[in-house]
Image (cartoon, rainbow, N blue to C red; front, side, top):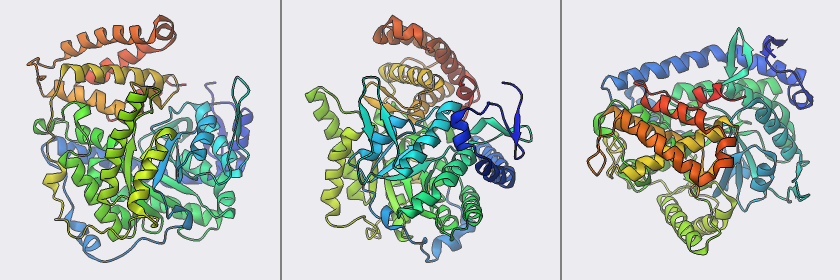
Length: 532
């Protein structure tokens, strides 16, 4: 429907069905409205500041540590205490908030499940609302799911600790408006999860825990701190009840980790190496810097100096302040082929051994089939400890801005470019069809990995880079490859699946965002217009 239903000064563009009435209760909407009215104007100013910072970098500046906060960096302070059920986070699984996936993730052999309203979820209205219902039922222990063949999925005793990841500051919730504008998706996700679940969570010895994505500055951390403090006061909770882990997955944020921890010190428990988004952010932030163009995505691993420096600096910064340093995502999917599966598990094991050895307190996986392997790695390093907070890396030389910005070695190949095209098109098709997390070529792809694929090609075109065989990367060459790889996708998937999907729209969006002169910040923004 086109007209708006007005409740508590918020406009809703969808009629309330049964699901909506369970979640968008009068009291919950009142709380959401308070948050929107109080915090949207400042959020808008923060987004404007992001644009201003990016313009300076586009004009030749490079990101760097900031001197005006030296007093924070040079003084001794710690974050507020960490709750008992978050002390051991050695393996965390992530995934969307779909009902079956929530049950399987909470039942996996892991310590924490990060339920994701962000990169793993294409936020069509129904899925967002159902996601809130699924998490409420999970918190209450009443969640179950029956599939088409009658198999019943239920929670086991002692499930993983639940953490909710909300949308980033840049993402709107277009189905709810205030003063004629779409409200922040982050406030929508936070408000409803907090409002409906904080009492039940606290009653069973847990609490309202959140992951905060895409943060770019300490000012944004301060904004979140004020949101949390307001929510605590609104609900009559003591300060520091709400706890958050911040993803360091943007290049600007890596230079402000101390400051982010300080401004969220009442509420924060750790930082996370969001490696895939971080690689995407490196490309996006330095898009005009022709000397910092990345090679094939497959070459950009945590052994690259700029990523290893990022990991070590995060650990050192966190542990000095008593906060956890979480490792990044293993996106591999176990294979039914024994030889391929052995290769997958060895790749994952090597990656996680590096993280554990560096001092990370835990790490991420995308599939329950990796849990045992990764748990074994961290068990071996941790022994009878719950975490590695005592690993201070004091012997490390200081990490410099030059190290964090160091150009990455590796080839740009035709094979790599074609793989980027196929992955990006298939992911965009899945996303605009309502699926935010999809297996493609043995990897669990979410928005971050698709972003790397399309921004890499944009950057190669923009700077007139050549492939290893001497081919110049141009817009006509990309368009030709896109058409050729569409035929490959069609052949791989079969005519029925291809015709039933939205691949033509996905290819059109891919073509547009890869060849336009200005790089768009996030493919999810134009993608959202194609979503229900």
